[in-house]
Image (tube, one colour):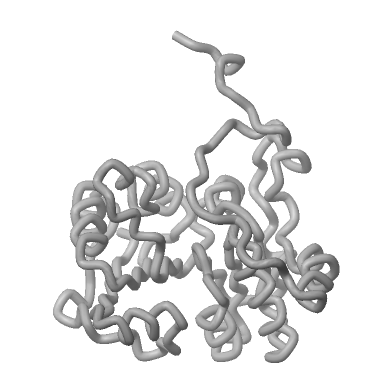
Length: 241
């Protein structure tokens, strides 16, 4: 049996987690880089980093979102269109978005400036690090919208909807909280339904409306691309039991 000293560590002292996917794309424009250098630190939720919180103590969401009636989580926000729309429509809700792709983060920061919303926090990193430190039962809604499908079978373990991440998600969602998944990949739908059923801590709702978007759905650039390329979007909704 191995002890904790056998677990490989990252440079920041965190246990090593494999990360798959891009962190950088095209070179950021000067204005985008300026937003990353200024606004990102202001909007980052404190206490998520391993160096500043090696004990992984729960972060204070009441201090992060004073007076908010609820806290929502978006896992991989892409260009941020959905987060901005939800923040504008629900100013009394605090929303935390996680996105490791820095170009998407820059797009969101610019959109926040244009929209003037103040109830968003942004983690430019791995959602798993955030879920480590979210208090149990603290999240009322979580979104997973057009995640990387990892279509090859040997890569299915890289998909978000797998037992390790479902464990984290089930811990942070309160009973009755919604977990929404949007994808244009039918195999990802199958994989998600099978993983959720095997988990047992979530109940599927809106089963007959799988191709009907939610009433507050604003659409995203990824959905528009799927429609242009002839793929039909699917909208899955689950409740935390």
